Image (cartoon, rainbow, N blue to C red; front, side, top):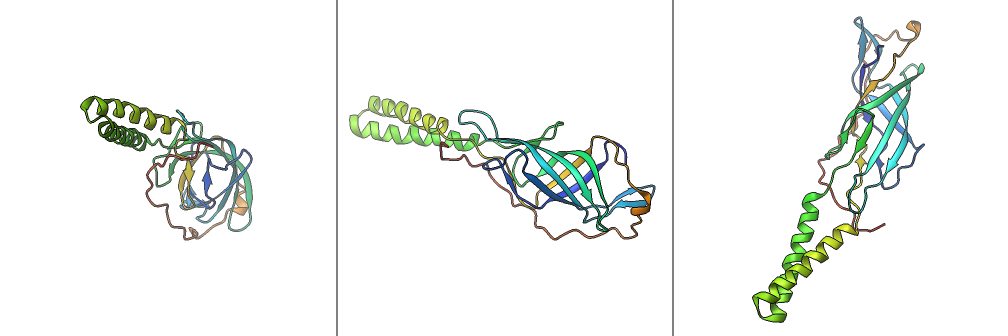
Length: 211
């Protein structure tokens, strides 16, 4: 199988930057048969194992959650296993995670939520200032204080964690040729994948804990 071949996969174990560590295993399964010269060489339902190479939590002021994944082994339904090298090229997570050419999967930001926190703080501060001072000046001062409080709340909490729920779809791309024993890939059926529901659509949520 040549470099650049794409393997459509589905994730069996959920991953989040909240607790992911380098060396943690990643378990996936193929969801579409791979053919070479009209011959099935990797049927649906083949297992793929990889590992997390690096995991980074989102920052409190800037930065996004990020994991780097490497896929290392494929196990066919007949038990034949092969070592290979591949990285994810995209991820259907139900959120807005993105994948770069190095295989890093990066989480979304919560810009709308951050803006809402600041606006809410501004409005509350304006109301308190107006009541306290019974004037427009008091409202302006209160608004400034509230905006500062809202900004502080954003800066003291982490951004959304990067999440890959169970059922996330991934496209893995071979970064070197994969050589298979022709006597062990005599598959006549396309295979069958496990029934895993895809992840629901998610909005990014800032972690309200500063830790």
